[in-house]
Length: 472
Ligand SMILES: Cc1cc2nc3c(=O)[nH]c(=O)nc-3n(C[C@H](O)[C@H](O)[C@H](O)COP(=O)(O)OP(=O)(O)OC[C@H]3O[C@@H](n4cnc5c(N)ncnc54)[C@H](O)[C@@H]3O)c2cc1C
Image (cartoon, rainbow, N blue to C red):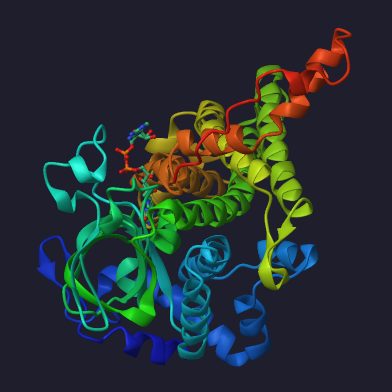
């Protein structure tokens, strides 16, 4: 597809709602304009350069191609399609021993996805009801998506998947269990692919990160380009044919998809957040220079700490690639410990980097006049005069810096980004438990014992660290 055919493909009878209103055609509706435009641009790019498209959609088979992938910049929907494809291929490898047909089903689906040049989003997070209760004990049994019926050639599913990024502008929904299911919960162990326009699928699209309706894009340089729609996706008795089912009742393997997704989503986030942390550090330096505070001791210390955090997070990205391992077909998978520890550190540190940036910037990060104020013949020159600080730092430049800092960190979009970094791909707890479970604790214990001269081999005699279950 190219951008035009992609836009046309969205007019396929899908049921999408925004603020209570039904959307007739997602491809032309203004709520989705930014995201459809960005996705179309990648389609156009790949239509012009099929080698680039093939390279992007081919799983990495060496450390170098994994690294190159981390450098490629495509729109968020294409990026999510890649993450989802890698999730399916990784999970198929893990569950092949209990469901051998899963690999064939996944390979067939992924091949079909590439042939159709379709985009897919990730439906994992269930409504979950009472968090203290497992799926089978929920007052409403649909709190976790489940199989509610069977008929020739497939199953019928019911439930809801929340916070699904860009659900309304893709073509397919990858539905997977949000966590490990117990032996008495086989109906919840269902993984499958569902077309967005399948009968019974409804998407309530939420657009909280957008810039205000009547705003000027110059004042919102980030949100005007990158705000994402989030989908509240309802599956109301949706039929799924056999060939689109990747897991059906094998509870022991129900977490395999979530683990694989967790790895690839966190790897993708780690990749993006490295540039985000550098950008925030860059803004701190720029605004300090513009304010004339860049040589003051406490400002320099804060910026140095920001640079150290950004560098350490990037080091985990590098390490996750350098320590990647191969699965079937030679596909390279980033290292889990470095990926999870890095994503955790980035998400946990983000707020402190933003705090330091806003501390350094001053109050104009939320009170600077707008680009339109500058254009007013009467007040514009005075705004420029009082926003300027010294030769070389013009009023307009400093005002634009403040507006960009506001949009990135202190606007509705800024808050949205912060929550996204904390929660998407699982909250901090999910990353800490994977890190603890995969960390080489035996080696750490041995080093500790050896450090005070305890006899060699004693670590093996000590109780082993329990292997923590890895959650979604
Ligand atoms: C911007 C954004 C984009 C997202 N994109 C997607 C997407 O594309 N696809 C998708 O499927 N999901 C997506 N998510 C969902 C994300 O994975 C979840 O928000 C996250 O896993 C937390 O789930 P929750 O929101 O239901 O909160 P909750 O499950 O209520 O969790 C809130 C807190 O409670 C803790 N908690 C809850 N239950 C337990 C328990 N039993 N034991 C211990 N701790 C517990 C959690 O660790 C967390 O700290 C996205 C989320 C955001 C914010």
